[in-house]
Image 1 (spheres, one colour):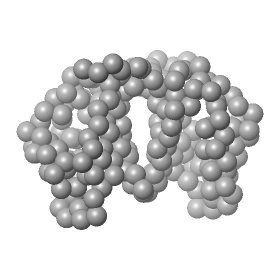
Image 2 (cartoon, rainbow over the protein chains, first blue to last red):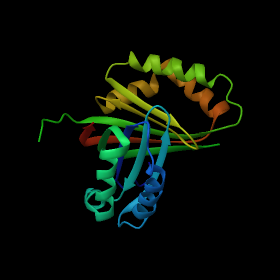
Image 3 (tube, rainbow over the protein chains, first blue to last red):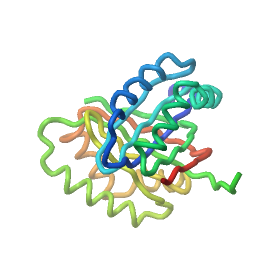
Length: 102
Length: 102
């Protein structure tokens, strides 16, 4: 068993409205902004019927700070107003992890 | 703050090989099998450059039992042999959750 440092994952699942003008630019802007945020570790993202974005963070505090970041707050409001018909956010503690590499 | 019952999420991220013959059938079979597994709560899935499947479970024991389920073990072996170039599995405790519904 290798040494494992606990970290956190935010699982963001969403469905979008038909007209999502401006969304792609904002998503890219937020991804670049998150990268500058203290405690940010990385992100995975894919969308088919549902969109799933999982971001990884060093601590709950880092997640809270990102949630309250001023530009991100504006983006969240735009998301609720224009782009998302539904979303769900799960804050998770990553307890173990393993990987396969062929 | 509403009452929140802790549960678990398995974040499975993967990249696939070019030839994934047989994968779609197996993925569907495993999804149907997981639904019959004790402690299974649900699943979200999407694939673009990376595939993300998040499954939700009542307990760590339920996750362990599913990992060791005999048909699932065969599917895992096929996955490593034929379909996946890489995958990563994160076992997570969901600590809080919120939702937006427009």
